[in-house]
Length: 96
Length: 205
Image 1 (tube, each protein chain N blue to C red):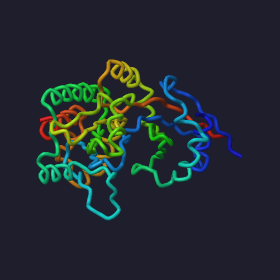
Image 2 (spheres, rainbow over the protein chains, first blue to last red):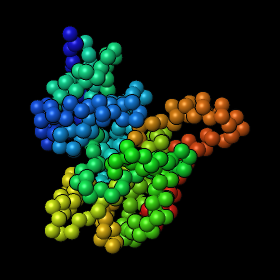
Image 3 (tube, rainbow over the protein chains, first blue to last red):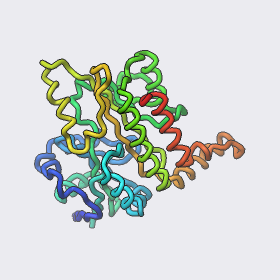
Image 4 (cartoon, one colour):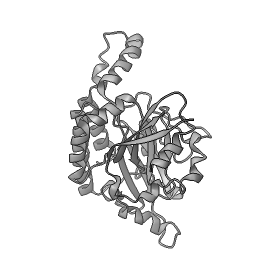
């Protein structure tokens, strides 16, 4: 029996519409996860309303995110126009 | 949210005990019927070509070489008002500077070309509504001729120089030998410049 616990490392999403991430609304498209795997082998999931992508990242990507990058990135996008695709949150799922 | 994450990874996980995930903005919010082309651009030509095959959907992101070919074929594919060109170039410049300052590289510019349907078309409203989506207004440009909406986004930007360098070193030094100065091809500052020059030459011109 596995136990899942997700830890919120960093999140901007408190001001977003959370129905995008509602489990029941996403149940239908969870059936097709396998097909939406990315080239890099990372896991991709598109939410039912197509607004968000849930994607796994590897250790080095995580290190980048949790380094000083996140701070300067946040300052950068706060100022307005930027073409950088937004990251709304970083999470960790721990399986016990 | 926690429930969704847990359920999502229930079948995916085999023997790892910890997964890191990010919640990302999805740039593909347009009605699929209206999407004409999608490109994943890096400003490089090496290996940047997607072969034509039956499996390609119109949502398959084509690459730099495909992009130049399409541009050759349809000269008026990209027509952007001059003031928008200037603005987008300066925004992009700030973006790539942030990334190169953080030693990041190998990111792509995702570029959608969306056809604007006639006023009485069922998708007309939905296409224009994209401008009101949070996080989208500053990504979109209406073409000068009024045929298209262009959408831009930088993706895959969490690759650091070090990892890439290691990877490139392993393979390219085997292929080209050590005298080849391939390091220049992966330096974050040069990577940013190359991306910027490419968009200046072919998109925001």
